[in-house]
Image 1 (cartoon, helix red, strand yellow):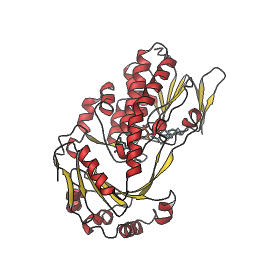
Image 2: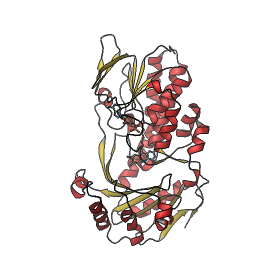
Image 3: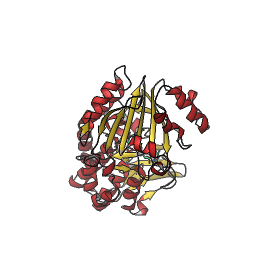
Image 4: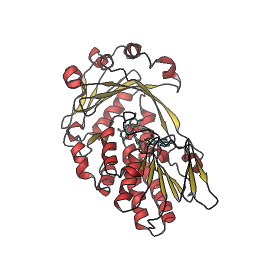
Length: 383
Ligand SMILES: Cc1cc2nc3c(=O)[nH]c(=O)nc-3n(C[C@H](O)[C@H](O)[C@H](O)COP(=O)(O)OP(=O)(O)OC[C@H]3O[C@@H](n4cnc5c(N)ncnc54)[C@H](O)[C@@H]3O)c2cc1C
């Protein structure tokens, strides 16, 4: 490929940074534009599990597997399912034996950033618009003015991508599921009972059309989600994020009838509550190739988190796009080939994630969830 090509990547998430890193390894420069003003502007979110054949494969192509092993948490791959009285329905007891290591998103991003020259990152650059030029190239418009021209612009800017509407008429649709997120700090020392309740990995409890999922993150932190099937505006009307004490009390009310030791998750939460509406692009989302613009990761195929494939797809998209750009003589053909392969590849996980969202919190919800926990168990499932 012509190494003089001007490439812009919009978004310094796991997808955009993986692409920039692999291109950099092969001597191809790209500029990453990120709206956040610096790497620590906001916590990057919870724990992610990386899969063989996608996320881990991408890290191999990025030459970062050793660095990854230093931050991976193999020991946190367990899962437990309880009923609302706190009885154990299922436990994957061998939490360390799986091949889907967990990693905190903040650590993953820091590792990818460290592997890139600082000069290729432009922080505090919220892209507003992409403009077509007469010569077939593209300019990016920011508050501070325009940058360009670029031969290739890659939208790695997440679910609400500003580039995606130039390629397809679809926007992510609300799945009907709303997550209220909360977090418990220093759990092993301050809340040993909760530490045991959640165990080394993920704990779920589903009853009465509601669900709680709690996940162990690094640094003895637990991130928990209260999950409801409700209209999109319900949570914003029901909860006041600015009043943490009332958030705790109202969540406890919503889960009335659940065992007190489960509700302690809300009692012990810090003040950082968030509302997350789970949205997805249609299964099979695709577009007609347009020279010089493409998408990867959530911008191309945001899906519900129930398949656990989101970040893995994003990183593998990046690895595949980089591979084809490196291997093919004609970069525009490489992009078209990447898109065709990606559309076919992600369809299955998009379908699984859509089914996961659709069947969540049904009247037989707990039985379906139990089936899912059994099928996902990395170690020896019990019960
Ligand atoms: C509650 C929840 C739980 C999840 N759990 C899992 C899980 O367990 N496993 C899993 O695999 N996936 C999970 N996901 C999905 C996963 O987070 C995403 O699939 C993944 O982060 C996608 O990576 P990305 O690089 O495509 O986009 P993102 O991670 O969204 O990164 C996009 C980047 O672009 C930047 N950006 C956005 N707009 C602009 C702009 N206009 N200009 C410049 N920069 C911009 C953003 O600031 C961000 O840094 C979960 C998602 C949710 C909501």
